[in-house]
Image 1 (tube, helix red, strand yellow):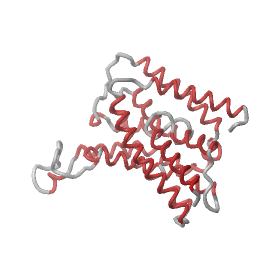
Image 2 (spheres, one colour; image 1 turned 30 degrees about the horizontal axis):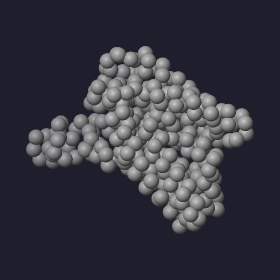
Image 3 (spheres, one colour; image 1 turned 60 degrees about the vertical axis):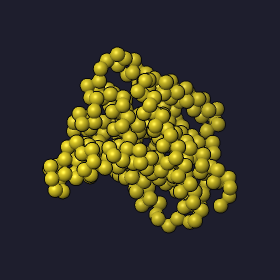
Image 4 (cartoon, helix red, strand yellow; image 1 turned 120 degrees about the vertical axis):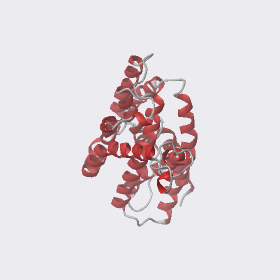
Length: 289
């Protein structure tokens, strides 16, 4: 294993850890990074990278699990606001968190069905710089327009417990857009969708974080099955390094984002997306991508 490949894996981990949670498209950035700094590992480099760019996200997901453990683990007597029963086993079951997970599962249905059926088709048709650039720009505009229109307005949903099954399904359809078109941003699509239907920024961000857990585990499992579990030592090392770096960086980025949105809106991310999309288009036209 060459030292340069390790450095590349670290860079990919950093980019993944930053972009997975900010609404600027992790997949889009990973595709662009691979154009600039190709990660060519193993006997079938294309197959390995196709798996790597998805499975590396497990590192980022574990950061959510660590940071929000008390809000997503549905068992325990401590801070149990809605126990199934006052005594016995039921006192250890947190019904409000179970309901949250039921809502999250509903949100995963659209992308799960379409992803399993057409993942290879979407990757072949849309995983290119043109699609990434267009979706970066479109959702950048969407962020600016939605945040401007919602300026000063009170959100209808200010708590995770207020999210209904209908709201969860609507958010799931917005996530589907990101599953089809790279450059959209899974977090960006779900946050835009949530804001449109009256969810507060903080709740939208938290729900997006939690929704990523089953989505990314499912997507990673699908990629691992397609790739096969026969890793060489080099492939395993590169993947693990990328995941660990993504985990550490994500811890910092998630804490930053949760603090940021309490005082600011998402307009700055909208402008970033538009500028990056324009740069990508120009580079592509110039033959640099």
